[in-house]
Amino acid sequence: MNLAVDLTSQCEQLNEITDPQEILSKGLVCIEGPVALACSFSMEDIVLIDLLQQLRQKVRIFAIDTGRLNEETLEIAETIRLRYDIEIDWYFPCQAAVEKLEREKGLFSFRDSLDNRQQCCHIRKVEPLKRALKGCAGWITGQRREHGATRNNLQALEIDQLNGNIVKLNPLCHWDESQLKDYIQQQRLPINRLYQMGYPSIGCAPCTRAVQPGEDARAGRWWWEHPDHKECGLHKR
Image 1 (cartoon, rainbow, N blue to C red):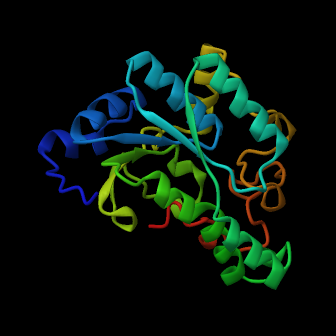
Image 2 (cartoon, one colour):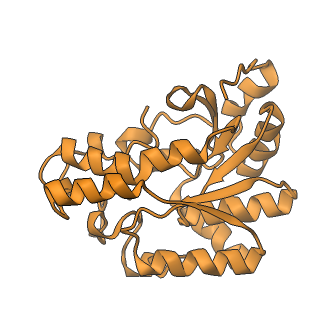
Image 3 (tube, rainbow, N blue to C red):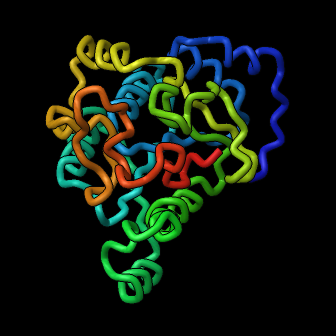
């Protein structure tokens, strides 16, 4: 769907609001049509699910199983499904594309070059995302400005030109890590146990590691690459 969005003054003011619940409630009013939450079962996404439950907003939740997820990620996904009694739409990469990639380039081609890594991410993440967003007027993400260089200008409400000019809502964009963790503690939310093992950002298992004290949250993602390249394509700006 190519959503023609009239960003009225009410919607534009979202970028002046810092409270995630207010951004969510007002942002959903601005989006004329179906909305979905993209969930990787990060701390951010679990907070968003909890906020949506409090707002009694029925938003479709989808997740992408890249085929390389950590077991701990799958465990927390099931924990969240049962806790909130919600349906999660799982999307998978195209089987033929994965088979061709691994047959021609092996299992770890993403470590050889930026182009190879982006090709792997496109097959395993970007293409399934486009299918997941088909028919949506907007989607919700757990992105935060604090995540790193590629997200420091993030706005609460953006237009996603890569996915048909639909609305992209980033309710947590203003929160820092302490605010995120405070909310999780207050609400007693379960989180991926990899966080306790030094993983502040969790993606595919071969592309994610624990970070050292003082490193930023995205330092453990594609650690062999320049910080400005650390996006998989889902949030290319």
